[in-house]
Image (cartoon, rainbow, N blue to C red; front, side, top):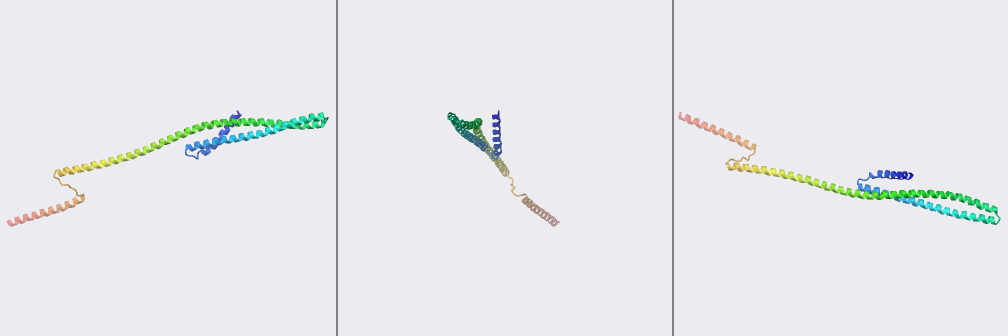
Length: 238
């Protein structure tokens, strides 16, 4: 149970740090690579912590071994002192022995605690290693899916642009065909007028109005001249 709580806190700490940094990246592939690198770095940190813990434990075990040797040596010296009739010297050796034994017991308890801590770090490392392997597989899968999706979007955008260009071209063709049909209709109308003997009025409306005015003026002048000649003829007869 304590191990689970430790792992949960470690994961929460990693995720909190990652979430603050992942927003900096727009490309999800960069986000995945960065998150993976951070997990690998975290695994490296765990390995370093485990190595330091093991080194410290080894030093304590070395010190404990030296104390055991001293305890054995003092015990032997106490026996020799008694054999030589030096009880006072034997007591002195035994006093030192018990002091060192107390120190040895403290070191052994510390060594056992450090072994437990090492086991916890090993479990954390194993769990983290598994998470990293799963994340790496998921990362590569997501990156591949992203690249495929990106390619599909680019293709669809290209097709969309091509479709727009084709639509614009089709509309231009329709406008050109409409103008051609108008010109054909006008040409046919002109041919029909020419065939019927009609005059083709190619003048602008303003030009037609000016000519019309002059013609009417001439017609009036001619009518006046005709009437005048007629009157002169009648008067001559009279």
